[in-house]
Image 1 (cartoon, rainbow, N blue to C red):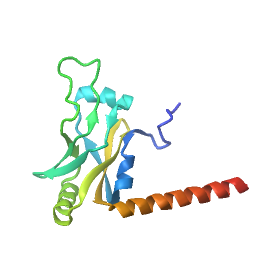
Image 2 (cartoon, helix red, strand yellow):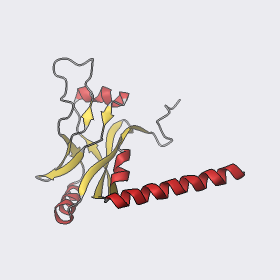
Image 3 (cartoon, rainbow, N blue to C red):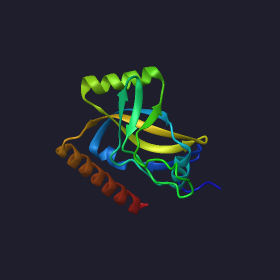
Image 4 (cartoon, rainbow, N blue to C red):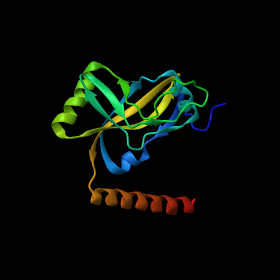
Length: 158
């Protein structure tokens, strides 16, 4: 039986950065792998991961993820991982260079959207984003509220 967070295609979402959709315009998405140490896997399975203020940068042809918090593992020994260490992201060289160039030239940012298990491997969905102004955020909230009202009205008629 599937857990309640697992979808039909075998993806189990560990954590999602819902605030990213509110704060940024999503320009382009990319699925990448992430290099974890052994003690980080159990907290991922338990969902003790936070993507709130994390971001990625390209350094020397490699993508690095900063400020992603993975809780400590109560069963690991003294060699437990550092909760907010920088982690290497695994992607093809041309994808890394493309994202890095767009960040340098257009002033965009790379932000993680969600972290999940896919076929037994931990994957991360990152996005190239552009910041929203305050009025853009208010506008998107107004549209969301209007859509919710429409759904509520249509739902009550059937």
